[in-house]
Length: 110
Image 1 (cartoon, one colour):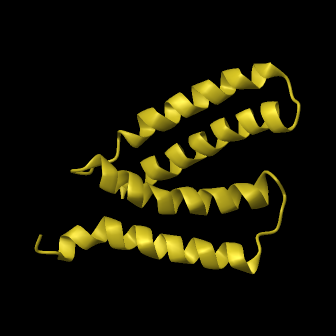
Image 2: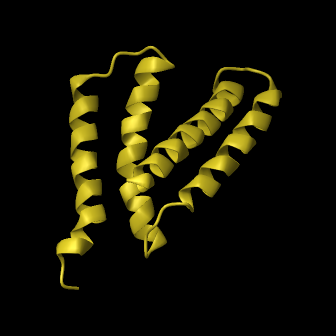
């Protein structure tokens, strides 16, 4: 269960870091936005290493589902854009896929 906390926190820092670069490069904000971007992306990478998994690739793939949930949440809360039906469907499909990757090894023989 602690893995989900690390995934969620990592997602928030990754999205915030990328959003800071977006603000600088796409919205014409000050280059000072790079400072919180780099700090946030560093925290993202550090937090993702806290996930208990045998293989990094599997942890990152499972993280993808959490990242997508957090991204749609960011869209709604920070950017104040109502997610579309297609956003919700895509989110559901990705979470199902991430769950298969995360839990699949428990049910697999190899």
